[in-house]
Image (tube, rainbow, N blue to C red; front, side, top):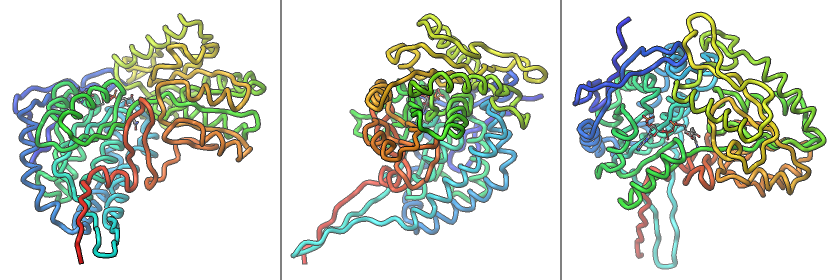
Length: 481
Ligand code: NDP
């Protein structure tokens, strides 16, 4: 089969990279190159920024409702093309189609509709004084840069693009080179939806080349980034001296805290999902499970037997619980982390190795759900984000010890607390250092609420008004009577 050739979307057109150079794109479930992605350079970023700058005055000058109308047309097209996008996301990333159909793609149109509506109702403040009035204008920044990761490719890209566009910015976006396909299909749908040329530009390529060219481009006024903590550090170091605005959504090592008085069945089922959904490649995955001592043994036994029963298989099969991990290098990284856990003295209860899936996926990159106990919170395994289907279970005596363990990493993205004592739930939520806390659930998102991490999990918040404020510059005007 000829390779699908992904194009950049610049100035309303689907274009080859200026250099003519492409990178290979692999389907991780079958282990084969199936498309090629532009290896864009500064020239391409430059063209994208110029077209965005040209489009900005008219786009920013439209009524919010006019922009919202175009965005809603795009959301409708996402829904109409759902199955095509589901298949593309699964083939590009390795995730089960079932997951892409239930979570990834519906969330793309939801993100777009949500911000279309929210921007129509966007308001700014006024502060009255005896002799005059202040009012605050919140104006779009101009051309903004969006850089997104491979784990929830179009979901996370649209989560940034939607607020930026809805409030009047023009965007240059770089999806991960590892999973570029749905962003390409999205570009086609933007054209079909009648998005004016230059309002959104999608430039594909590697982080160190295309991504870096965005960070240093003087025409890009802000960077909204989701990805790993090390990349986040590099971005902060590069853009801060240029006084660009930035928002960083980074890694996590999220505690899933189980008290003995929890609703056991619900806790067990959801903890399993929190551990292994998307092959453990969600920043919010509950990868450190902390269980109160009196429940620990029973929980470990039941959790392990259910983990063993999970089906790792062809992402196209409706009964596959886990698909492939995103790439061979990532598979190797996860296997290396498993080896480290064993060297650190961890007791392996299940998984621990790559697995071969028969049939069309025989050359794919699969890993069994893996569970360790017996590792201290200070171990490398409990301190570093693995971002794969690997979890540890530790035990604790009481609330104080649970808090010490939960807060005892550099990360602070999300946490879950399982208890039937609601006062304890509130007490724990107040003491835990994560930007998002769930009590008796996991990964429930209300798009109006602030989302983001503390400590090395990032700076800034997304969601609701937070994103609209990030993508605008406040300007106070005082009028004297
Ligand atoms: P990376 O940090 O490797 O990459 C993220 C994006 O940054 C990619 O588009 C990448 O490009 C790009 N990039 C890499 N290097 C540079 C650079 N020097 N300059 C500019 N851009 C660059 O993360 P992953 O894609 O591996 O994603 C996994 C990480 O994302 C995990 O740590 C996970 O926790 C985190 N994440 C955080 C979320 C949150 O909301 N807090 C949500 C989802 C994931 P390319 O891939 O093309 O190299």
